[in-house]
Image (cartoon, rainbow, N blue to C red; front, side, top):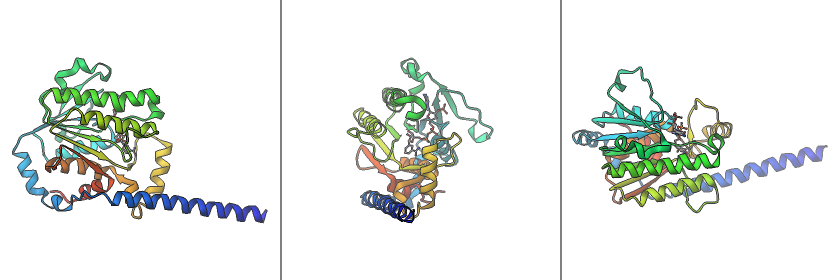
Amino acid sequence: MNLLITLLGKATGYFTLVIVFIAAILNYRDYSDPVTFTSMAANMESLEEEFRLQNKSCFIMGATGETGSLLLKELLDRNLFSKITLIGRRQVTFEDKAYEKLVQEVVDFEKLEEHTTAFQGHDVGYCCLGTTKAKAGAEGFIRVDHDYVLKSAELAKAGGCSQFHLESSKGADKSSSFLYLKVKGQVEADIEALAFDRFSIYRPAVLLVERKESRAGEWMARKVLSSCSFMFPSMSVPIQAVARAMASNTLLKPEQKTEILENKAIHTLGSSPTT
Ligand SMILES: NC(=O)c1ccc[n+]([C@@H]2O[C@H](COP(=O)([O-])OP(=O)(O)OC[C@H]3O[C@@H](n4cnc5c(N)ncnc54)[C@H](OP(=O)(O)O)[C@@H]3O)[C@@H](O)[C@H]2O)c1
């Protein structure tokens, strides 16, 4: 019995060491991300003023979700756009007066070609849309996270939108053998082929969020990661940081048409002080 307890103790110890080792590698890899936004973020106030003067309009998909709703709040608080349109599958009621001038377009994502007008005339598009395999099944997940997102991007491009900001995921890779990462990587690649003037991809790690809906796996990961997030910041990110990074990054002028903000860049840009 004593031997069994000793062996179990050792096994747990080794397992913990392996987890910490993998986490450290992932952390190091993300920290080697060459993109640094610190100096650009310092200039945020004047960039905001300059941007407001351009009277741009935008649309948000997924604004009823966790990241999307915070992104909407961020854009409204900072008053960056003269017009904001929410494109979603349902009408939303807002109590706050700040939300009064929003335009809402309710669309059937299975028949997006019937909703071309909803996608017309926007300067900037944000996409925080997504589901999970657990909720929608493998086919449903591909349908939402790839097909809906790509078709919407196509319609937006055809409607005159010049920049598209996509919330993707850490590890997105169209060659991955994991469905989730493969689909995320594939939609990134397919949207890049549409050749927007600017395409910004955000690849957050595990989102730190008190989610309204229960997701057991994500809840476990969040509990573990939030307690040690200061040690391994590349493995998680608060949704507030993602929303702020998406808004702030819109004000910057990247050197390349397609840019990828890995988790570290999201932390940097998302924690920068704003007005
Ligand atoms: N969870 C993570 O740790 C994690 C990490 C990295 C990246 N991401 C990615 O980040 C993105 C945003 O995640 P989130 O957790 O903020 O999203 P979320 O809270 O789950 O919200 C998802 C949004 O997509 C919409 N949506 C879902 N299924 C739909 C369908 N069948 N038809 C039309 N709309 C649909 C929802 O609309 P309704 O409100 O109408 O349902 C909602 O607005 C997702 O693409 C996700 O894969 C997540």
